[in-house]
Structure formats: structure tokens, C-alpha cells
Image (cartoon, rainbow, N blue to C red; front, side, top):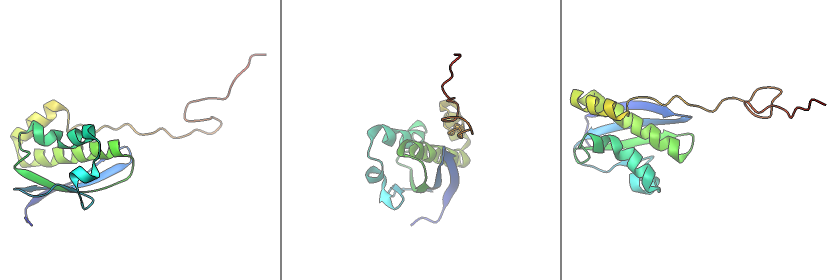
Length: 130
């Protein structure tokens, strides 16, 4: 196992990903499983690997991720954000590519809390004039 790695924690909704990015060849693991086993949907697989593909560095790095919370889509986006931040720390050239692709910007949208006296966060009771 390689000793040198870049470590980042990033979030999306309520998912938080702890990403260790290693230089060299190795297996990509998420929560101790192979990445292809953990991520079953092809579109989310592309989301996770998009920072590495944008930097043309898929063969030069591998990662270990510990992730918890939220759903599969938010988890994939949290992993993507963590990988992008780790790559940006390694090389200034990567940072320019990732910034242009929009991978370094955190998506701050979260579920709005339910308000008292309402059905949901914004849905009000039914109102009748007469």
C-alpha cells in the first residue's frame, strides 16, 4: 500500500465522503468494496470518475473512500467533489481544468426544514374564502 496520499472530506446534502487519493496503480474502493460493486448505476459511475477523466489521469491515481449518509446520487456527487479537491491540491493544472468543469464548486442545496403550522416546508393548509 502506498504511503503518500491526499486526504479530503466533502459533502453533498447529508452525504459526507472521506476521500484518500493515492498516486500509482491500485483498486478503487468505496466503503471497503470495489467501486464497480458499490455503484451499480452507470450514470453515477460516470459522475464519480468524471474528475479523473477531465484531468486525463484515470490510470495514474486510485482512491479509497469512506462514505455515509443520504442516497446513492448524493453520495456519488460527494465522492466526485472530494476527488476533485484532492486532484486540485496535487497540481495547479488540474485545478484549472476542474474549476472550468465546475467540479470544485460545492452544491449547497439541502432539504428545507418543515415549518410549524404547515403540511411541509412551504405547503400551507387549504384555505377557503367562504
